[in-house]
Amino acid sequence: MYKKSKQRETIARLLKSTTSHPSAIWIYEQVKKEIPHISLATVYRNLRILKQSGEIKEVCIADDTAFFDGNIRQHYHFRCDRCGKIIDLEEPADTEIETRIARKTGLKVTHHRLELGGLCLECQKRGPWGQNHN
Ligand code: ZN
Ligand code: MN
Image 1 (tube, rainbow, N blue to C red):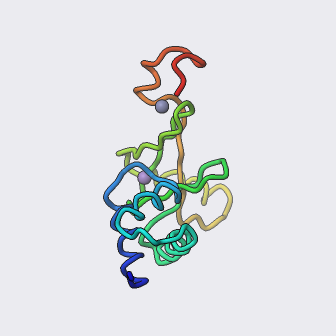
Image 2: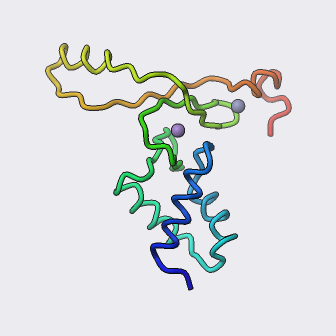
C-alpha cells in the first residue's frame, strides 16, 4: 500500500516530466501504471492539494476540462482551436500591460495570464477544417 505522500509525489513527478498539460483523467491513467489501486477521486484530491501548495498550476481554458501544468514559472500558452493542444510559449511576460492597466484604472495589478489561440503547426499542414479530422 502506498502512503499518501508517495501518491502525491508520483503525481507531481509525472506532471513535471511532461510539457503536454494533461487532464486529470490522463494523469489517473498514467499514475495507475505505478500505483494500480489508486482511485480517480484520490488523483483529484492530490491535484487540488498540489495546486493549493503552489507545486503545480491549473491552466484555465474556456470549457469544462481542467488541465494541469507542472511548470509553475510564469509563461503564456497557445491553444490550438483544432486539436486542442496547449503549447508553452517562450515569450517574456509583458509587465507593461500590468503597469498600463494599473495606471488607467487604479487597480492594484499583481499578475496576469495570457492565452493565445489559432492553429498549431501540424494542424496548419492538415488542410481545411472538416478534412482528416482526428
Ligand atoms: Zn492543432
Ligand atoms: Mn504551460
